[in-house]
Image (cartoon, rainbow, N blue to C red; front, side, top):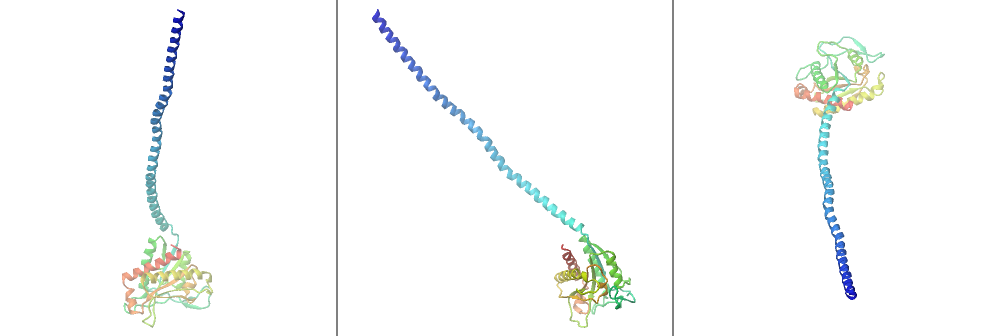
Length: 301
């Protein structure tokens, strides 16, 4: 019996040992399966984490579109702003322009000082010249040009005053200058046509005071600039010959003016071809546009 018990005990121990190894092997497999399962479980999780990045990328791609829309809106607003500013610029022009159509059908009589305090006297006004071919008097041509110039300048936003609007008003040179002075004009434009014994003479000129003017020397720079601007643009636009800016202190209307002044001699009525050309609506319009551009240039527009 004792021997049998020993054999039984050995077999029991062997069985128990084999059973323990089998369970250990099973326990060893479990962590491996758990890690694999965890890895497989994490994969979908990682994929889900990437989705927001993908969406974010999509949002990032959408943003340029939004910027383009915003840019387009900005450009549209910019264009509208540009148009508004252009309109505003015209509407805010504070300059007052006095236009003096040279001479008149009724001539002012008498004489008047060449300048303030001058002992030298000149005729208050003269009848002006007339077309050698057209027979149109200068005062009619200058009034026609001045009326057109007034309309053009007003459309550009200027305030415009005419020294006369009919041909039956007698005005002396001093009286005309006083209209500009009383209006505190920013520019005084005197419209005239030229005449010469030489019928070949042609082209436009402007006339202003000299640096040594005894009455208004402080206005020389402004007078000269105004004269240059108008003459340059007039000749450029009308295509006429640029004669010169004549600096002289012999014009009483210039000497009495306390504001920037120029005389625009738009052409020679003593030249048969230029005389007839100045009677045409097309050429008159070119003259007017040129003077208006010169005024804009003078004010920096």
